[in-house]
Image (cartoon, rainbow, N blue to C red; front, side, top):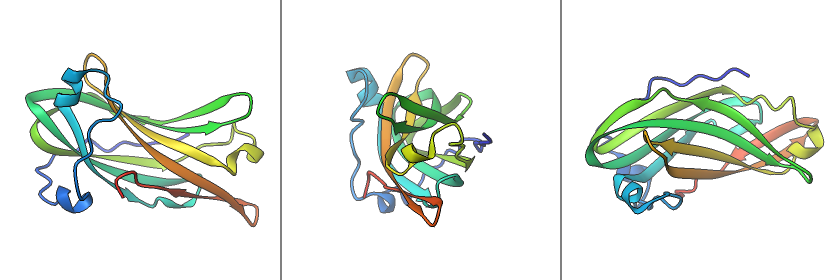
Length: 164
């Protein structure tokens, strides 16, 4: 499996409000201190529709409410089978410091290697999870539903944006 994460980019993301009509709270934050630290405000998905194994990009916008924090982002694809859950790690960024205010990170996945999963289990709904960690704990999970259909012997996916 090849995956690549560009260096996480930080920006003032002046157009973040155009990415999402309103900020969503961190629904899966682990503690109240984490909730006030990190809030997701938008997600853009490039190449979300196409062959299941093809690459895609996620641009996650978020607000930090403290002077600075070091964050790591992990991306995984989950396929539920009848007897077991298959988790495909896609990438993990190096820890990077982010400052108070609006920030963003670009997560680039070169391909999704599902060769270890039986083809019959792929034509189903999957879950793409972006997990955000500070130096102590997981502070947020952004989950995107992935619908997969088999068409002419090929698996095609659509990644749904939870902010739309």
